Length: 510
Image 1 (cartoon, rainbow, N blue to C red):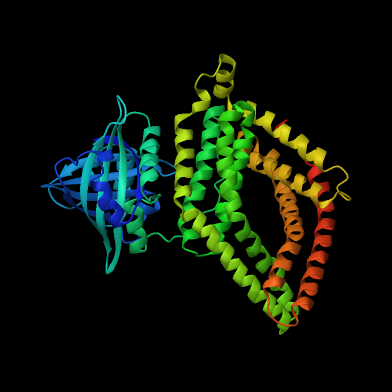
Image 2 (spheres, helix red, strand yellow; image 1 turned 45 degrees about the horizontal axis):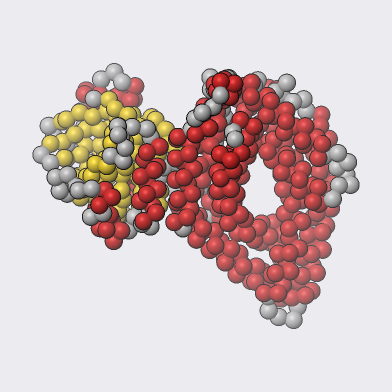
């Protein structure tokens, strides 16, 4: 039997899970708690998982059910996957049951090359509730507690699955928001399968980078808008755990990139959406971006400015004191970013934005003309948006050799919006025409970003000096400040060359 599964997961503490199990909001559990054991199979080299497919055999009461999942989409915590289920007599894969579906053929090809062996095991106690928040809407709420076993490794399972049985998908976000208003929960973008593969060594967590080529030629304007926003939200969520865990600083950088791209994506389609409908979403993203800003600024000062100065002046006690003070302030700023993304407010903000995208309120009550614009080919609107951004960049770059730092900041914002929009829409145009402009925009944004970092550095250097200890800290401040000023002048000279290259590029959308 082939189905499409649509579900949303929330991770909670065991204590919260116990309180949720008896909350009248979810109604009574049907049939009491059920113990389920699931065995996940793959080749020894995890060839199925590398193709984003999972093969599971789960014992449900007195029978075994074989399930293959894959394909579909992931949208800000909302999983949409193709699911093929068959009852089997024993806990061993039966590839012959999978039939002619593409997923089944893929599994058969992999199984024909290498033996399928158990990869890991999931054991949970599941209590199931059915919630009907409105007529024609049914949501299955599964409260799962248990463990994932992979060799000698263990990981606890304590989560809520909201699976849509009937009705529109935005109802899942609505119910998740109602739960988040009463309990400390967080979106869990990983399936049990993904967690199991991480435990078994088949998947290694790493900072997720932005996905390019988002808008495709067959898309309407509405399809393009949702694709851009969902992709950016997914990028943010994919780096969420890494930021909270205080791991590689690249997680934080990528989270900020995701938010910047999302703001630019909302701005790119702002001409089509009523301001009162769009502004709350823009404010949400702006608030999240600002909460991560200080951590990124201190990271840049430590890595891009202080590190090379320390190499040039090894053993300088004042610089060493300044570096220690910077490290403390950097740690505090990173802790603030972690608290922001670990907060209940963050979860509610992401759920709200996901529900807004699912519901598509900008189409409700849209007049005939507006509806036609949303359903028009994305390429038509892309050329209009890119031309608008391009004119703004040209205007703000006039007299680039003598403009002030605040003016360069405005140019940087304009160039960033053009670069992100060009990245979204480039697949709609000939690649050979788009590449020169894309390369020039990347270089221009890098230089403008470096200039902006240099202009922000003096305030950070002053703060680090005040926090430093020792008699030579003032001398260290002077050294770092002169280094930063020299770097700024070098970047401004580089900007002139980069700007000339950009101006020679033809707009590929015309």
